[in-house]
Every structure is written in structure tokens, then in C-alpha cells.
Image (cartoon, rainbow, N blue to C red; front, side, top):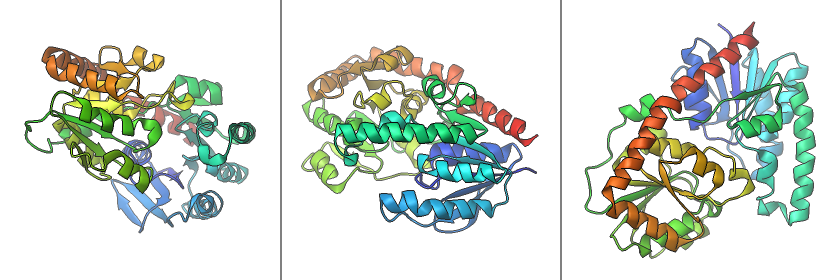
Length: 364
């Protein structure tokens, strides 16, 4: 049985893509899978050996200290193939390759583009310098690695057309189908957003929009807040918002199934312009109509499953909410279309075969 090791210094232990999709799929395919990740104990979950890393003590600790722990603890697994998920682990990947290991770089996003929106790095000139420096460093790393995985054709082409493997972040249909409804129907239409609750994901605008609807609606939010201040800014004195906290995957899908409309109203940041947000496919798998940002790429991919809005306009968002509530046939049409699209084209069960095939080729 081939030993393989996934490594993440930034993602949570049971991250949907890292743990539930990739690690569990490989374990089911017969691989001896370890996951080096922030966790509180050693244990085996769904066939995956959890190798714990300490919690981060800030961004610098994570990037420069925690990576050392990740390197040494991953080596102790004595694996043949190493698969890492965070850009700060590129140096770890290079060291592993020098030691003769097979190495896969899994870039969940176009990090170079993402850097441009990270205001904590400083002004725009400094961010461009950091972006260009990272891109050179990333290219050097990719030269070492055996394969590069990402989530959209555009990112794969940008990173490495020769070594790139497209592994889209589609939902696990079996998990969704087995999930129950969280609660019976309520009198108010339920709107939902699941995921990181940050400014650039349009959370403040949807909180404002729910107060502007002519229908009596309720907004459910589930996920980690960007900061306590931003949480207060969004939901303080807003009795139409219910915050469910950060939920494990098994508890997210019942919430979506109980809701009526799903939101994906991210700002049109460069990093999002060619992205495929997993939450959109999860809403579709639950037959929910969506309200999405009017990003051209999304209007092409999700045409027929969503209404599109300016994500920075609470008034426009509120109008689309009322339109979906008032015109029941439209809501049902969008939800049904999305479900068919997921069932026929966008499932992890089908996508995971590419991951297993890649590992088979590297195991030889």
C-alpha cells in the first residue's frame, strides 16, 4: 500500500477540499493517507491518519515557524508522495523533492492575483512588488514539483500547462443527498450564505439588503467572521439575521436544504473573476435558486441557475430577493436547472477519478 501525505499549515483539519474530498477519496482508493494539519490529537478519521500541527500564533508564526513543524512531521510519515495545499509550504515541497520524494502542489487559488487584494501588505506598489516576488518564487518551486493541481482551467494554464492537472472543486453529491433538512418550513423565506464572512465576499451588503426587502425574510449566515468588528458592523441591531457559527460539513447541508435562496455575491476582485465557488455548486445540488455577482465568467457558467446583481448594491440585491419570492415559478425553474447541472456535470464523484489516476501514475 503506497503511503501518501497531505500537508496544510493554513486550512482547518476537516477542510472540505483537503480532507473530505482529496484525502478520503485516496483512502477509499487504497492508499495509506496521512494528513499533517492543525489538530489537537493523533487519530484516524474515515481512513485518514491525522498528524497534528500546533495552532498558529499569528500570520508570521504560521508562515515561518509552523512550516518547520509541517516539514519534519510530514517526513516522519515515510510517505512516497507528498501533496501540499498552501503557498507558504512551497519551500517544504522543494526540500521534499530534493530528498527524492514525489511532490504535488495544490494551488486552490491564483495566489499572485490574490495578493493584490491583501490590504494588510501595504499600498498598491508594495503589493505589486510582493506579487511579482512570489510569482518568481512559485515558478522556481513548480520547476521542482512533479505535478500542479488547481481548480479552474485558467489557473492551471497560468501555473503550468505542462504539469497542470485540473481538479475542480465540485460538491460530494452523496453527502448532500444523505443530509436531512435542519428544520421544517418556516413562515419567512430563508436566505443563506455559507463560507468565510468577509467584506470582499459582500456580506455587509446582503445583511443590508435583507432589511430592504418588501417580503419578511430572514438571512442565515454560517462561517468564520473576518473580525469581531466586522461582525458587529454587519449584524448588530439587525433582527433579520441569524448567525449559526462555524459548522462542520455534515451540519452545513441541512441548513442549505432548509433555506430558499443561496447567495454568492463576492466583490469582483481579480482573484474571483475566473473562480468557481464551491458554495454555488452546493446550493445547486440542494435545488436552491441563487443570487450571484454579475461577474461575466459566472454569468456564463451559472446561466439558468441564478439571478445576477451588482454585489455592492443592497437595493439591487433586495429587488432580486423579492423577485424570486414573488415569482415562485422562476425560483423553481432556477433551482431545478441547477440540480440537473450538478447531477450531470458537476460532481466530485466524477472529478475525483482524475486525482486517483494522477496518484496511480506517480506511484509507478
